[in-house]
Length: 149
Ligand SMILES: C[S@@+](CC[C@H](N)C(=O)[O-])C[C@H]1O[C@@H](n2cnc3c(N)ncnc32)[C@H](O)[C@@H]1O
Image 1 (cartoon, rainbow, N blue to C red):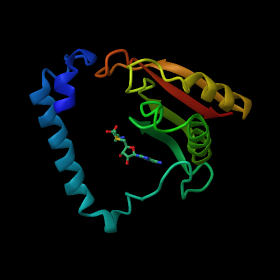
Image 2: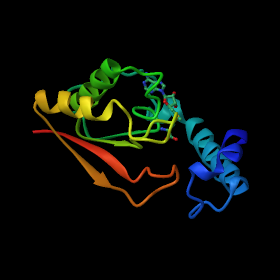
Image 3: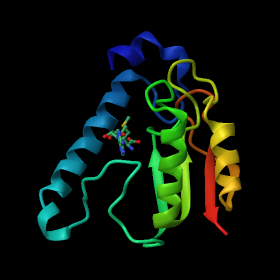
Image 4: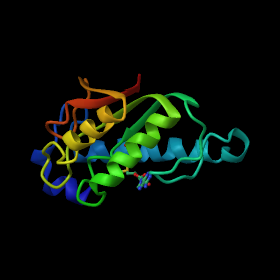
C-alpha cells in the first residue's frame, strides 16, 4: 500500500477509487481466500507447485490463467524461465491467458514478450494479444493468449 501511495500516477483510479479502497478490496480477497483455503484438504482445489514444472497431465485443463507473475517480474524471472513456464502452461491447458504484460520496473511492455511469443510459435503454439476491459496498472490493456494448435 505504501508503494502504491508513492506511485499513484502509475495506476488507473476508476474501478478502485483510491488507495484506501484498494486496501479494502485486497483485504476482502484475502479473507475470501483464507476462508476457502480452510477446506483445502477436502476440496483439493489448491495444489502447491512452482513453474516451470507443474504436476499435471497433458491437456488436463481447458484454461490456465497466470496473473501478475510472468512478464510483470521480468527483472527477476529470466527469458528462458518465461519460455519454459509458458511451454509448461501450454502443455497442461488447451488455452493459456497471461496478464499483465508490463514489467513492474517501468510499466512498459516486458522485454521478454516478443522473444517468448516467437519461441512459442516455433514450438507450434498459436499466440496472439487480446484487449482486456480491466486496467489498474496504467497501460496494462492486453493479455497474451496461447493455444496448442
Ligand atoms: C503478485 S502475486 C500475484 C498473485 C495473483 N496471481 C494475483 O494476480 O493477484 C505473484 C505470485 O507469483 C507466485 N510465484 C512466484 N514464483 C512462482 C513460480 N515459480 N511458479 C508459480 N508461481 C510463482 C507467487 O507465489 C505469488 O503468488
